[in-house]
Image 1: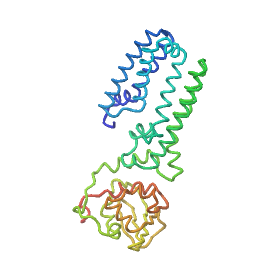
Image 2: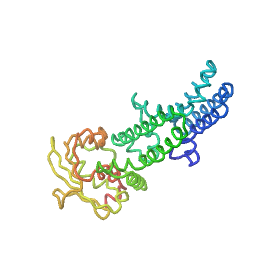
Image 3: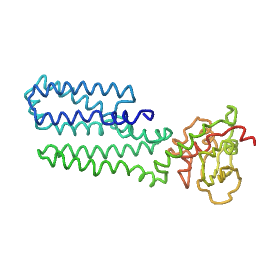
Image 4: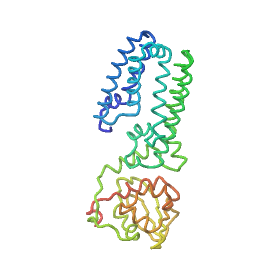
Length: 334
C-alpha cells in the first residue's frame, strides 16, 4: 500500500466502520423491522463494495470481512425472523459492533492467520522485517491487547447506559489502545536491545539510496573465510553514514578463525585481531554463515533459532544486510 495516496489509505483504514456507526444510530431512532432490513441490505452492499475496492487497491482486512458477514447475518435474521431480530437490534446494536471488532482481533491468530495489526504494521516497517519472529510477536501481543479491550467493551455494552456503551469504551480505545499501539513496539524492541522502528525505517531508506551492485560476477563463496574476508568489498558507505563500529567473527566447526570488520569514516577494513572490543560479536559455525551468505539459510531465522550467537549491539546485526549490500565494482578495484 506504500504506493497509494493518503486519501486511499485513509479510506481503506476506515471504510467499514462508518457502516457500523450508521446502523447503530438508525437502530436507535428507526427500530422497525422493515427499516432495519432495508438499511442492513444497503450497508451489506456497501461493505461488499469496500471488499472489492480493498482487493483492487491492496488487501481486505479482517474488519472488512467480519463487518460484511455481520450485515449479511443481520439481513438474513431480519428477513426470516423480523420481530425477534428487530427487538434484539433495537437493544443491542452496539454490542454487535463490539462483537465484530472482538471477532476480527481474537479469532484469526487462533487458526494460524496473521494478527490483525500485522496488516497495518507492514505499512511502516521495512519489508525485510516482515517475517522476523520479533515483528510477528509484537503484533500478536498488540492484537490480543486490542481483543481484550474489545471484549471489555462488549461486556460493558450489555448494560444500557451511555457510560457503558459509549463513554467508557471510547475512553479505553483512545486512552489505552491507541497509546499502547504507538509505544509498545519501541518498548519491546528496546528491551530486546534492538533498534526502534524509526531507526529501522531510516536505515532501510539509506540503504535504498544507492542500489546495490554486486562486485563479484555471480560466483558463490566456497568457504566461510572467503565470505568474511570479502565483506569489505560489499560494504555500502551510503548506508553506513557516520557509523563507527567493530563487528567480530569467531568461526568454528569445519573452519576455525577470528576476523574483525572495522567500520570507520565510510570505510570497512578487515583485521585478524581485535583493535578494541567488538560492538557486535558473532559466534557461528562455518557452515551456518556460509549457508546464510549463499542464500540457503535466512539469517534472521537462523539467529532466532540459535543456529549462531550474537552478542552486543543487535541493531548492527539487523543492519548488516544493508551495510554489506554491495557497491560499484570500479570502487572496489581502486
